[in-house]
Image 1 (cartoon, rainbow, N blue to C red):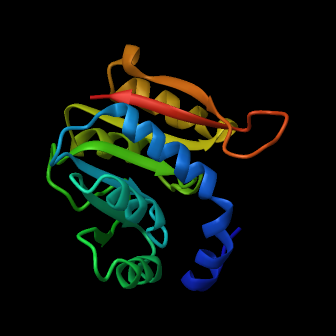
Image 2: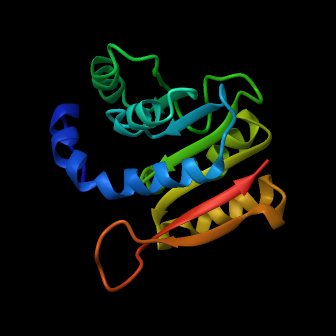
Length: 180
């Protein structure tokens, strides 16, 4: 669903994505990242996930990137009193130096990427050696990203696991994982 205004999108999606954010926070807790580790949320929208990560894990450095300037503008307003940084950028041409991040997360944005192959390659570029990539999206939307990840990352490091953020009798979401 597309919204012309960032604040309307935020109102619509904030509550609906609470369980998915909770699952991602649980996954980050299980990852046991070292203090000072850097985390990037790709396709951050209004920035709710990076803000939740920073609030839950204050020892992590958190960034968000989104293609839409209006989303980044809203995210910056919401993050006014935090250390979270938000940047306008395309996943296929990220405005970050090589080997910057320890963990990259993307939730429900991958199926909107214009250049999935280029996005996966650039995500690999900005991951530090040993860094992790987690893409949470609809299962059927992850086929191309999975193939691209197997080309850019060590193929044995690429996995997909079902994710059930809402109560439905089927798993319609998955997490694509890869390690640099």
